[in-house]
Image (cartoon, rainbow, N blue to C red; front, side, top):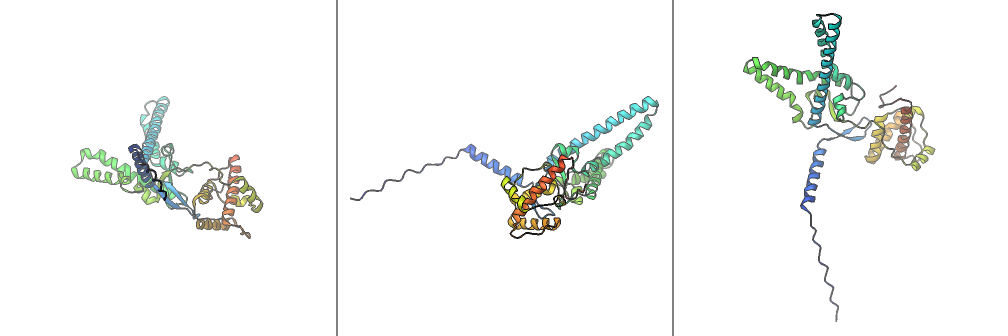
Length: 315
């Protein structure tokens, strides 16, 4: 008499809670929303990095902070000049007002240029919200780009507000023209996927979330560093060829990029520093060894107060 097969155990039903499914959908929607603000950029070194653009709300918040700072400066200056001229020469309020108008002109037109042309490429408002200006081609932000994007600001913001202030006592056509002008320029960042102003479009710039300026964690292990020290020996001049920005890019290459990208970056670095490829030398070993040497050199310079921002910084 043949034995009958034992019945299969009943299959357990998987119950997915409504709350878990809702959280998963919300998480996926947030990830999709965040991915729309990420741009893939190829640097001059041939590495692909990912940047997150600033949202329209973040840019508006930074702009309001900068406006508040500007008005605080000009008001404090007006009160100080008025007090100074009143104390030294009573009745010279007109002279104080003339000096204040000149100062107000410079603050209004050169506030943004002064801060964005600096190494941090960000005004105090942008720095407060973790933003900075960057070139869309992946290169260094130039003075021409900063001047272009900020001189356009007067057309974008100054003229629309003047139209709105003048529309009360003018005819309907001028008021309509001012309204259309204001809508085109003030709302332009809301109707393009990169959240760019017209000035950004002309200057070739983005406003992005500011990357960390501190050195990242060393990704090479102690064993790898010791082994590389015996095979690779870079001179200080070769290690000084790049700066902190290139160190971050090289770390992204070592962590994320494909072997073909590593090969291209290794070839570029060898050419720039004048390195002759040794027998049996792999691109990965060379990049890890140069990463360790570059990081060590940058840390030595920072201990001496010499911060090398990028390969263009020749101080």
